[in-house]
Image (cartoon, rainbow over all chains, first blue to last red; front, side):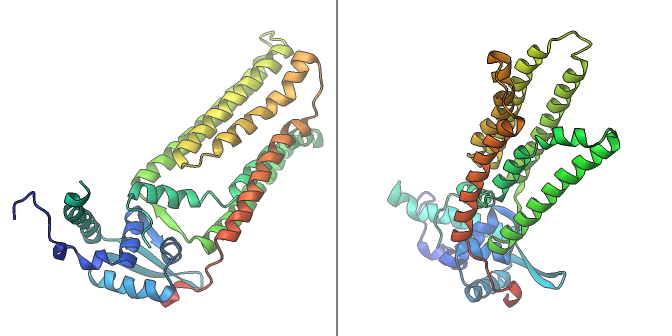
Length: 104
Length: 216
């Protein structure tokens, strides 16, 4: 395959590719950090779904999850790590490579 | 799930949502509507200290009340976030614009103070000051609308700016006295009306997110 040729879809980062995780990552990409309520509201996920996808993203080192207390209320602050930021940018380029020949 | 892949638009829409609560509009409307109170405060006491204290209590109370309400409304329904560098830069520009607007206000105040010594007629001031006020309000609100991505602030700017025109121009041009409460109250009522509509829509479209994030 030449350098300019289409990129095989299998090279796409599946961790990012999943729609719910992609929603989480894109929403965190455009802010410095956000609390869990913000991400929940923006993505339309349930608490359970959000927790499960965040665990995967945190394990991969894409998202940083910080837990704290504001008074007596627990507060979870989420932010994209530089690795997560790079992963999303790489994913975008891969997808353009995959879809470019189709839509171009 | 992902409604758009345009990240710039995603950021703009997310940020704009935080100004769709209506409380921001109610605050602006209340600020404008209460401006005639300044004339009342002046009549309460001859002491400058008492008058300044009264202004601080009125406007400080207004800011505390509305911003507290707004923070609570937004946090329970939209959550909280720290903007990215590009948005922070825009917010910084808005702060500079507001500071510039205060400077223009002070210059206007100074002109009013030196006018008697400069032998300017009251009619000149009644004609010129509303124009300065209007231009200042429309420019400031338009810049806010642009940098905060909240288009309806253009309308608020025109309404804010029109208050002094409504008060002074009929008198300067046709000798018609418009009460201060009407001149400021009418545009303020429109802004409050917009705020109430936005607040109703916001509360309807964004229910309180009840579960805590302790489950994460």
